[in-house]
Length: 89
Image 1 (cartoon, helix red, strand yellow):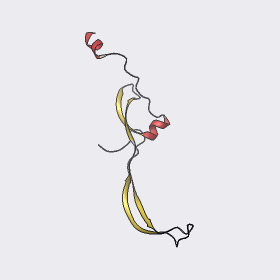
Image 2: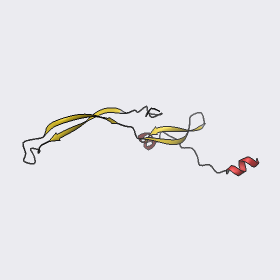
Image 3: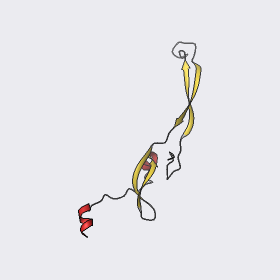
Image 4: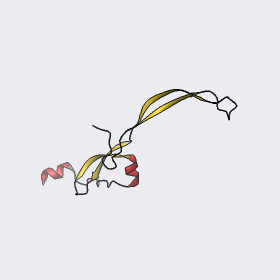
């Protein structure tokens, strides 16, 4: 399953880790130098949330945490009925 937010379309981004050595000039050294650059990925903080869709159906969606903070998701209401009651009716 792809790590993509269903609402915002956010996906993992490529980046790099930059290794530096030496002492900064501010701290009294001769300056820092880049010794290695390694590839890495910035992954999306996906959460699996039970949400109400625009057509009214309730289902689980994989949404970025930033979308939850912005209030783009309307969470489904908590269930009040019990399983035993549903079987009797």
